[in-house]
Length: 358
Image (tube, rainbow, N blue to C red; front, side):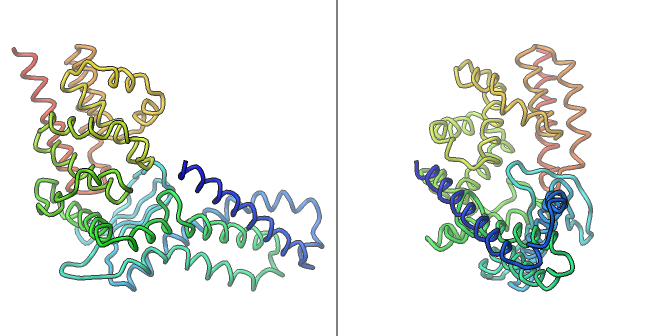
């Protein structure tokens, strides 16, 4: 109920802001002289302005993150991603459900930094360039109106705490030290994965979490999936499924990327362990999960191979699907995750060989 109320309030604020901007610009002598034909130009300008502000927003995180002492790791707009790996910048395709862009920074070794300007950097850059754009209102009235409007809307949608936006992250960091520690863990895990470390190489402190608080917010939820990933690598599948079962009734509290991954990992574990349950049947018929699993990734192909092996009793096709998964490892952004995925694929392949020869 609280989530729905926040969504409604945010929507109302956006409507009020849009009406206010429309009123202000409606009083402008420049805009009142425009004809109806300019409406088409405005509609064309809006998506262009949105893409520009998306780039500006992520650039703001990068600039203010560097000012705060953080190091650059990756910069993503839609699926196109620049990633720093082995001191080189590489271009990769990488999607994250529920996000259109992302700028990930890492914490230098033995450094204590503030996350405030890093998190505020996006909306600060949107605000600065939106205000500066008004200097060109006489030259390009329609586009500048669209650009300014999109900028203000992006500031509101990212600044007002909601979902898992920048404002909400700042709010969570202000609540307690634990949330700050979890965000630090998250950024440090990126550094380790970029170096080629896998989950079993992570410090034990990364997994020292309160199980009852794992679903408290998306910072603690990250810890849950960090723990699940380590259990995967250690092939402690029963223990991983046990944790997943504990969280089943609270899975709706997960943010969208984690919610989708929760269902995907549960499907994988329950299938691999040959579980017979209503939950597994439900996931096998889940259209949202089915669509998510269509995304081209090594992980999805590996899970599909597991289903073909266990459910369809077709080890030959399963091995072919694992070969497809192996060919997709190269697009995984983190070096450590590529190593981890290769280990997972090899493990499933070995299990199939053992099953066939028994």
